[in-house]
Image (cartoon, rainbow, N blue to C red; front, side):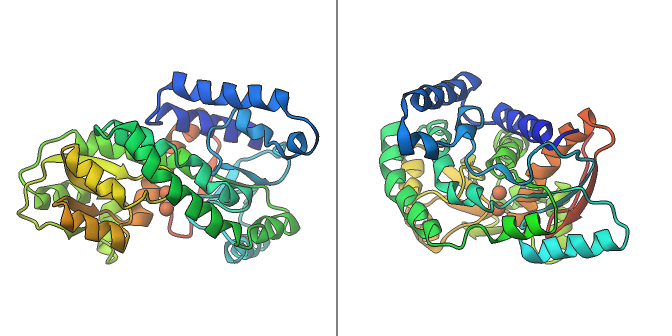
Length: 320
Ligand SMILES: [Fe+2]
Ligand SMILES: [Fe+2]
């Protein structure tokens, strides 16, 4: 399968699991295409054509033409120059690697990370937070993320991939959407007596179990094993990065009792305590791993000869 085709299919799968409807996403893409038609000069030069079909700025091909054949894929949660050197060493020893995928964004996918954050507004709307509140609170946080990433050295990894002749792509929100939907179905939709029971259910998920065995279990960061959960949501699993801490008060007012998160910032934790919202920090890397596994369960089903070499925190767990 060509890299272009594989990546396009991955984006489609991410869209199927998005908190927004297919119609909503198509509307966003159409608006981008219409905007592009009206641009001239430098603005036209700088327009990112990808935006007319891929709603995820943080997921894209970062090295290669896309015309490369992909059969043996190396996948990592963070792929930077060290992992590319590892891939090159392995290739020298005879391991077949013809393409590399990273979860956490690199290159332009990192530069555009803030662009996926509006998804958070729809995520919170599903919990009953008015869109005008969530949008107003998100904007300053989005600007902060944009300014902070703007100063990074963004294109080191893609250059290393080019020099070592590895085509490379990233799927970030694409696979985070899948783990968000999975947690909604597997945990949030069920009833639990207390947070202790939720922890047990999380530990029944193989990726979390494997990480727990190595000392990285899901932990309660606010509340106790005996706390009653109330309404459970997984609002901190997708949407690029953590939302603003103001989201805690909003969710509390909207009736949320327990938030499942990949990673909880100190400011968010303070707010959670103030507003009596329980928080469970599910292991970050195990959570990212679940999203990638769900994505490749579908891709490997469709493309039988695709093989995966897991590195950098990713472990392959297949679900049938
Ligand atoms: Fe993630
Ligand atoms: Fe992550």
